[in-house]
Image (cartoon, rainbow, N blue to C red; front, side):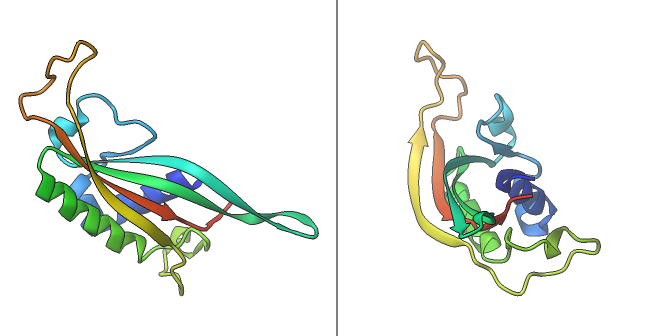
Amino acid sequence: MNAETKLRSLAIGDPTVSALIGTRWFNLRLLPGYINNGTCVRVTRVSTLYRYAQQGRQQLSAPRLQIDVLDFDPITCDNAAEVIMTFLGRISLAQTSQFDSPATTPPQFPNIILNKRPGMIPDVDASGNPIASKGPIFTQSIDVRIPNIDN
């Protein structure tokens, strides 16, 4: 399972994150129309750092992910980004304990949040006409490096 799929699985299973976004957590691209239902999250892999030893490539990688939180309200968007940053501080993809049955909390949390930046996307079609009457989509982009066991 890749890092994006593991992250989505843990986010949807987390009661705090799930209360905010439900299942509106997408890998790579936001599906049309979902933003009208509330706060959405889009995850894009920026790069991957692979670890090597004398024997070759190790099973542990460290993908750098951009997690975009999107909403029509800038305050809701910022609050949701803070919840996701707190969530990132409670998980580890470098261990399998959270995916065991029953799931257990990992003993360490190796994720590194590199930065958080605001943005805005004009909600327009290819001709420049507004798609929704709610106005622009506000974003908070969280840049994070997450160690991950490649399995």
